[in-house]
Picture 1 (spheres, rainbow, N blue to C red):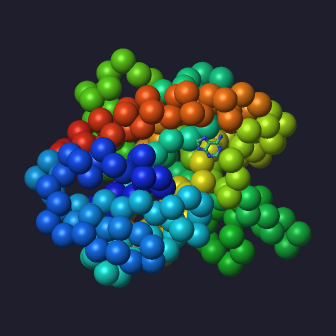
Picture 2 (tube, rainbow, N blue to C red):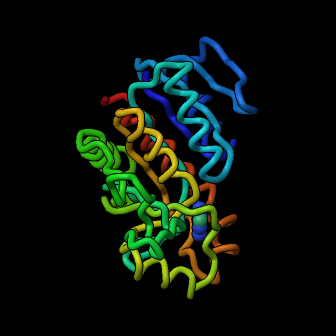
Length: 230
Ligand code: ADE
């Protein structure tokens, strides 16, 4: 079974509409929609925003629904000039940009006493996502690169520049690293797919509502194509 997580209702509503729902269950204030999408067994769920919600959600998918892979779909702020609004970023790897134990000699972003700085996404899912993107939304740019996550909506050029310099991320959002970490701990494959809604700078709070719908539309087309091809 493939777990599909979106942070917000807007991000999962169209996926739920496209699937055949067999059962709906509430847990931890989240609604888990079980059924099939493109002939594949899936559970689609809105986790809520931020890393704690996303981690709790992923663990429930593993423990209670037997997820053997997790896909996170949603929107993000671009961290690179060449990654435009509406483009899609597929995670090569994911890290927490707000984790800082540098005082103990750890690299910025690394969780103390864990053996990795970033969590690598599954190679097969990355390749399938890239192919699916080119097929489902051929007119938009696809980028495979690092996704960085924090409990922070980035809407300030200086904050954006600092995050970019520290991590060489392609986009920033608020759940991916938590989902990636939970998947890593449970030894299951994952990939994060994000359509760009803003540039994570001073215009982000204005661009976000304008481009949110278009970005969500692109990520829904992509997820449907990807799941059908898994
Ligand atoms: N999701 C969409 N845009 C974002 C931003 N600028 N920062 C964090 N999460 C986001």
